Image 1 (tube, rainbow, N blue to C red):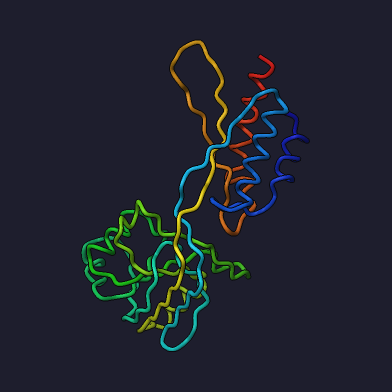
Image 2: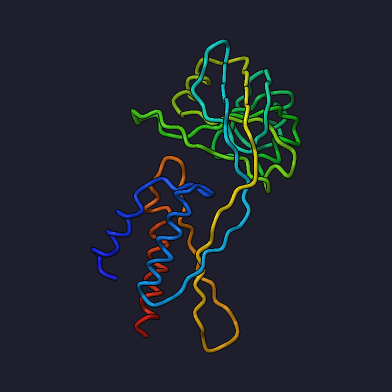
Amino acid sequence: MEANQIMQIFADTAFVRMGGSPEELRTAEYIQAKCAEMGFAATIEGFEVDMADMQEATLTVDGATITCKGYRGAGCADIEAPLYYLRGDDKHALSGCKGKIVLVDGYLGYWIYQDLLENGAVGFITYDGNANYADRDIDQRELRSYVHKGNKLPGVNINAKDAIALIRDDAAIAHIVLKQNEYKGQSHNVILDLPGETDEYIAFTAHYDSTSLSQGAYDNMSGAVGLLGLVEHFAEN
């Protein structure tokens, strides 16, 4: 695949394409068409995903409104509690979570969420962005079902600069309001089955959706381009 072809693919898919969105399906159909150009019939197979339309997401700390985005899939809630800054995942730090809305230092992964549940947190705040950048972008995040397993805590995501200010000012009381409509949507896989010399399968995969703030050239249309390069190779060999 020539460099100009690769750059054209990036240009053609230079839009936000979150999983389950019309833009994600549009990209699936684009990849399918690229396979057809090389003589292969790829199929698009839908699968069920958790989706949510956010109606309201607010965070108030000590009476001041902090710009935020609510976690999709984190349910609906109206909760006020003391704010607690979780500095680590050791037992001593986690012991302070009980009855608190917890500001998590870093990404909310599976095990940190389980720690919050086990230690009695009633809500959570995460952050992203960079304190040294001028923008105040906030990524749209979701609380996935394999993480909460039916035990949902309300959560919001804020910009790093606001998180730093909360810690610096020794913020005391946080209030989270979440209102959202949760439902099952459709995401899609693009599947190309190439015959080989045995009945065993080797699977090569890459996701082609993006986050809410990204056109996803690096994460991960580059991976999808790599797979199209394999398709091109087998079309010629």
